Image (cartoon, rainbow, N blue to C red):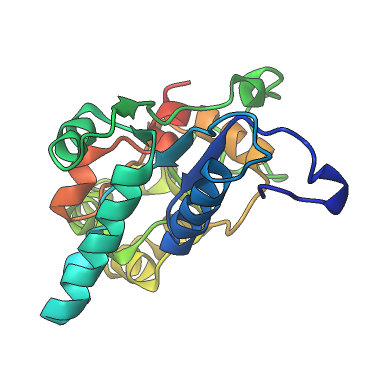
Length: 239
């Protein structure tokens, strides 16, 4: 918040940052930016930085009217042009947005917090130790229908049918929000007994399971916009 507490209304702020989604965040900060620029009590102009993670992939699926589409783009353009800096997470996005505005567009990639990896415990195993030494595939975070790797489940299922030892050692471990279609695809491949759907876990635990996995899954959404970014999860995976 710009002024999170009444006692801080006299506090000097030298930066305003806004990130989408939701879009209203950008408009609220842009409005605050304009007011502060015109405020006679302000000692300086506040830089407004707009952080844009990606072009929203589902925008083209909203079936907007021509008026709504133009209105959306006009509002988006007003934010881009009003900002002092636009920050994006890839070179491809930098090129895309630089073609749309004269505002400087800078790149700050996603990343990871190195402190999360400073004191990793020994690799985790279940209490009965039954999964230690298994061939484990790990996915952490949101696993959406649009990113379901159906062919992977099919190939793993075929391999498991051909090789009982492979089936015995295969472990598919999912953490976070998982779409039902993912679970259905795994079950359809005959791998339901190889699945451990762990749900939400503390992040400190998640990074330990990442370190333990033999294969870390990073399926992209089946949308062209997905190619413009590398998710923060990628950087955690290689940490």
